[in-house]
Length: 287
Image (cartoon, rainbow, N blue to C red; front, top):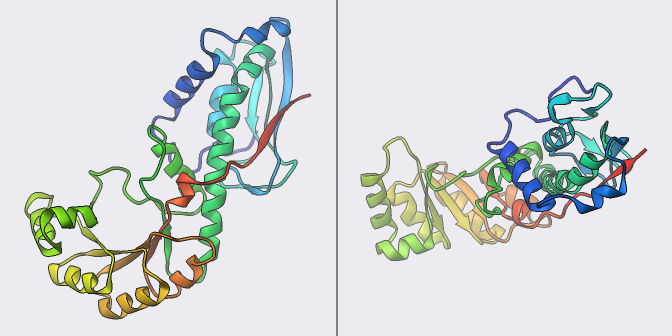
């Protein structure tokens, strides 16, 4: 067994409950195909990568493939790598021996977690690599699947990214609709300062360079530059002159993230890394 725990750093909140929910969804009242193999059959197996990328989700494999209660001494499960390690086609990431019926019933749920989270970690790592050499930190967004936010944001961390807000209580972000509903940037900032804890920084979304100037005058701590081209971002950096942290968001992809990073901003947030990451393929082979 690999000497380290499968998770990288802190375990994502609620991951064990997600395993239970996944099995309840997939197995239902019972896997009727289980009768194809003898009840006492044991199978040795390996989980292999089928593409290059970053593995993430081995803790789910460990939970779903470790024998329940360890009832049989010849049953085991071990992770050969840890989350964040690189893989290529044929890399074995997990192996073990388990009751055949249990193994085949749990296979799909385990692989779904592994493939989805590895896809997020892999895509995140590509964005992180694209801005290497600059001061920019790649952030995620709240564009996550309901109920899966904690593990999707965990996969972002595994890929080298940073987490933005986990939820709306984590920080202030005054967006365009807040500004319209409040009557302006200064009005929105003033109301937040009166109502939110004094320890919280205030971030304001700006769609134009003119709005950046107004956000600075209102005392914004962080300014989010929404859907701005690199030239406009550069103008905003010149106007700001270090008076607030700057975050770029909207329309960011692997083709333009490097250029945006060169403007001198502090953060670039990318919704794509959670809402559009392609699963990294793995398969399980019974030996």
